[in-house]
Length: 169
Ligand SMILES: [Zn+2]
Image (cartoon, rainbow, N blue to C red; front, side, top):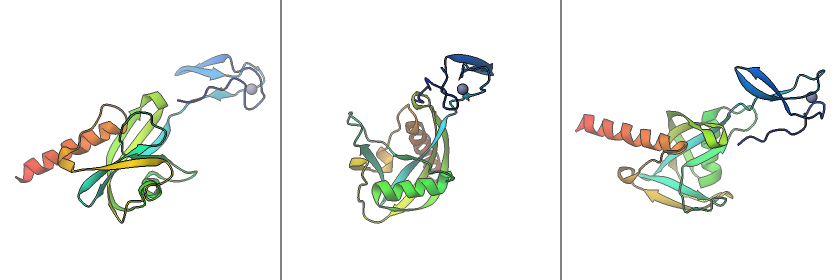
């Protein structure tokens, strides 16, 4: 969810204007100012972390529901996705991630995000970071995705894994 500017960050005029460039966009009402709010999606990295044969799902302190998800995070300024994902795994689980595989990118419309999802192996002892309060281990054979955001990456990863297993059996 992107905040819509009420006042122009350039000239402080009312942002009630609209310009059409492909689609309607929020714009400054001051004729001498050209500020337009583009609301581009925010990239987010996600990691399906495999640790000692299990997938680690975690619960964020901010979540009110009893929901366990994959590790996600924002990129720092000038950071690219893969090192950002490895950094997030270290910060949130205390694990050293290696051998990442890109699963794909997924839209998370409610938050206007594009989730770039990886599977990654990780070593070490789990120590939860500040954002998490609980985790659980799921054997890959029991893992199921969910129909939103990074959950779609989990579904794709599970399906791909099953297809590979079927091909070698
Ligand atoms: Zn303005």
